[in-house]
Image 1: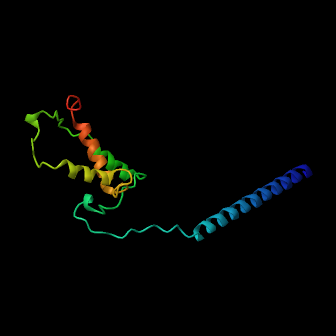
Image 2: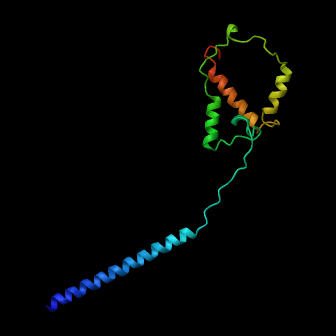
Image 3: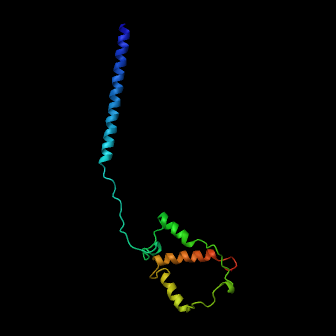
Length: 144
């Protein structure tokens, strides 16, 4: 009987130690939860709303940040191949439509070149997208 009482005493002592350990762990978790609840959430950036009739007219002079997923998608959409391919044969091309003097074209072109006034502008990005779209849409024959 004395052995049985001693075993029970040992079990009670072990259970009390387990209860003490669990209580300490619960207190640590409670402290962590309280600390997290007291943390100030990071401020969310709010962007002022600006009016535009269409998305393409919104902030047209602002450069496109290609580091974002949305801007990368915009580039891909703007430069993708059109469904109709163009072979650039005279019968499929408007001939002499809106003739522009070479000097006018050269002057406009230099503003988009390196060091030009529009080098780092949204219009330069738009021109690049359009150039890719046109080149992707020409047939192999038209590129010869």
